[in-house]
Amino acid sequence: MTARQQGPKLPQGFIFIAFLNFTVGAVLGAVMAVDPAEMPVLAGIHAILNPYGWLTVLIYGMTFAVLALSLGVRLPTLWQGWLQLVVAEGGVVLVVVGASASLDWIRRIGVILLVLAPVLFLYNILSGVRYTRKTAGTAQQVQADAGRLFGRFAAYRATDAVGQRGTDLSLMIFIVAAVWAAIEDWGAAAGVGLATTSRLEWLTFYGWIGGTTLSVALHLAPRFLGRKVEPAWLWSMLQVAWFGGVLLAELGSAFGVSWNRVGSVLVGGALFVTALRYIQLSLVRGKHQDDAGETSRVIGGPGLAAWFTAWGFALVFGGILVVNGQPFALSSIHFLFLGFITSLVYAVGYTAFPIVLGRSAPQPWLGYVQIACAIIGAASLIYAFVLFGNGVVNRLLLGAGGVFAVVGVLGFLAMWAIPSRRRAL
Image (cartoon, rainbow, N blue to C red):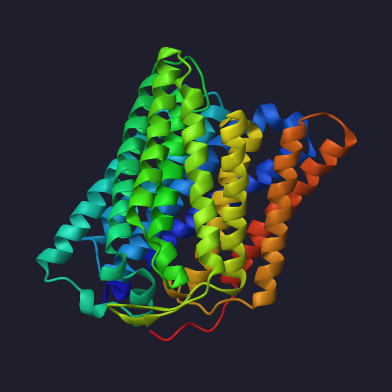
């Protein structure tokens, strides 16, 4: 029995719940965009759903999927994976309900669950790897297409090591941030569930979510593009700049010194150079020989369009951070989450979901329409937040951005939800 046959629905469960959270968050965002008067009521819920319900749960699910498909890693018992999903989503739901109903005890239970979720995630990964090794591994059971997309190759070993270091560090940062947030929230009279100081946002938004995204991208880029993304020392320097910037900003916020400005410059510079390099590598076609034989570009069609979109947003956002250094302005948060990371999720989805979900890819023209809607939505919202006024143009941009962003995510979900011919295993 393969790892895929043993527990294929676990990562799919995480992915489904993540997109459900994203859909609810996007709809709430659209409501606020159309009617800004709703912001005082909905903004706190929106702010919880995006980092914790959408991106964090998605990271959990994709990690389980990649480990199972590429290395045959499986958990000793599936219930521990489902327990993590219940804890992670339960935390989000209780925080939202508790904050909305002004029930502090419910909110605080939710915060505790949000702290336990990454700890369970770390335990599940370690126990899964240990169990797989103990049972003689399942490397030979990995599907050929999954191995080509997610497998370990000697040609990518150097950059994979940098990426692995980044994901490990990001998870440790998230655990620290979650514990810290819970302690601060427990002593607060009221709140939305997690303290939203710049110190915690640096750790969660840029240390955990941003750090994980860039680290995973370093794993995926050579496999998607069918080429090495050397030199590894460049990515190590960019990683040091990114996490060093987060650390400086964190210390600056804690001690009230100007290091957070330096941190913004380092983070923005690292993002700018990373995006520029990936765009450059993506424009050059080619094949190379690795230990698995000759490889070529895997990503294409709507996936490639979303890939360029993501790094285009990252390029502009990195430059903006270097110039004005406002990482937590509404425009910056939407640059990071909606423009960059969500577009990258679409790119990964179009490329990897046929394998992860076992479904045929949707028609390319549908994908292009969906990406166009997502681009219009993200760009309109970001520009509206840059203007940030009460004029007619600003309200039109907010409304259009919210509607197109929702259409984008619903369109993406619909393409994978519609029954289709399953791929042969």
